[in-house]
Structure formats: structure tokens, C-alpha cells
Image (cartoon, rainbow, N blue to C red; front, side):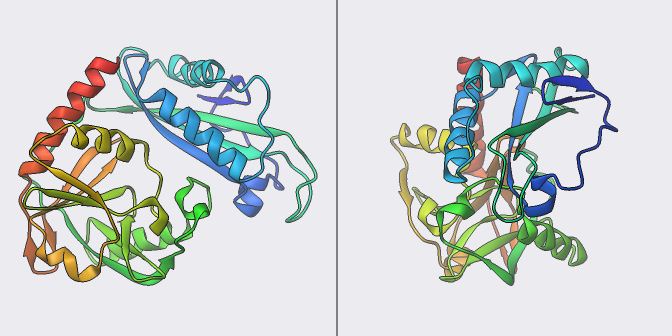
Length: 282
């Protein structure tokens, strides 16, 4: 069951052929984690969505408050009987039908879907290898649009196919300045000694919700220095650890990049702190 513009209906609901999200990628989405009816990082997701809608010059409806956003998510959770477990929720907001590249409508529509997750908290599996490599067929632009979660994700789709064809678990994306910016499905963090580094938003990486949460956690740890700076591909094999973050997985350690293998010690520490943050927030 899905929530389609406020009405709960079955998953076979169709959209118009000229839906702008389908026709032009004129849409945004948020992927959220809901645990026993509690929406994790709701405020961060809501404000990112509002900021993204403004950047795309979408007109935000007056009723589209954070409370409304939460209620519409819970409609999908309840309809799918996921109130007593953990769930992955996707909210897609698209501009109303009409026009070619130039929109003729100021309305917006939305779809909310929910599927079950296996665990209530973030877990880290350090027994399973996780190998990545660079994806160099196409590049990310280091601009504001690249930081948004739009439905225009061709590089992520093609990169995922490339990873699958080459028996990789993920790929790292590079921007046009030849800096490593992120993974296909999350933000990238690197560890060298007591320094934790992550690419800056200005390099074109996703303005990730979990990235923001983890930055707050790291800043409170006296034993580590946090830096947001551009990452050269040549740095990767000199690092002690690398890991990927997103709100569904939490922290995914990278165990191998080319001939280099990595530890997971800092990732484990940060995951414990992150789970404490989640429990306190909810």
C-alpha cells in the first residue's frame, strides 16, 4: 500500500504519462528510517526537503509543515502494518503536470511508500568483505544541484550496473575536478590515524542526513580531528579506514579498494555513538 497524494491505495496506482518526475526528473525524494512508529531525524529530512524544493523553485503548499510530512509518512506505515517494526520509507515529491521544460503548474504531488527492515538499530557486519573501486565513466558536477536528492540519478544507476558487472559491492564517484566525492548510495568518510575526513558539500556530494548526524557525533569526540576537505584518488590507498553512510544502513565499512585492505575500528566506535544518538532522540 502507498500514500498517493494523501490517499492510501494499492501499489498498482499509476501516474500520468506526462508526470514531470517521470518525464524530466522534476522531482525530489527522501529516504527515511522509521522504527516502531518513530521517524528518525524527521526534522533534518523535512528541512532538507524544503530547502531542495526552494532550490528547484517548487511552490511549497501552505499545509506542507513538518507535522503534515510526519503524518503522511505514518499513513503509509500504518497501511502496511509496520508500526511495530522498522521500515524504510521513500517520499517522492514531484511538480504538477504541464509544460515542457518550462512548467505550467505551481502544484506539487507526492507518493509515500514503506517497506520492512530487518533491524531496529544500526548494525555493522565486519565479517563480510565489502570491495569498492572508482567509477570513472561519468563525473559529478561540483555544484548545488548535485547535492540534492532528485530523481535524476543516471550516474548512480549506471555506476551500480558497473559495480555489479565487475563483482564490486559499490563504487566511488569522482567530480569534474577529479576529486572523490561520495559512494553510489551514501557519503564517504576516511580515517588516517586520529583524523576523520569527509568531502565537503561544495565538491558536489549529497547533503546527507546521516552525514550531518555523524559530523555532530565526531565533533564531540576529543580523540579525533574532523576535517571537511577535497579527497584525491591518490589518498585512498593511504587511509586506515573508509566507510559509507546513509540513513538506512547507518555505517558501511569498506574492507578493500584495489590492493588495499582496511580496518573497521573507528567505524565500530562511531556506530555505537550513533545508536546512542538515535535512542536519545526517540
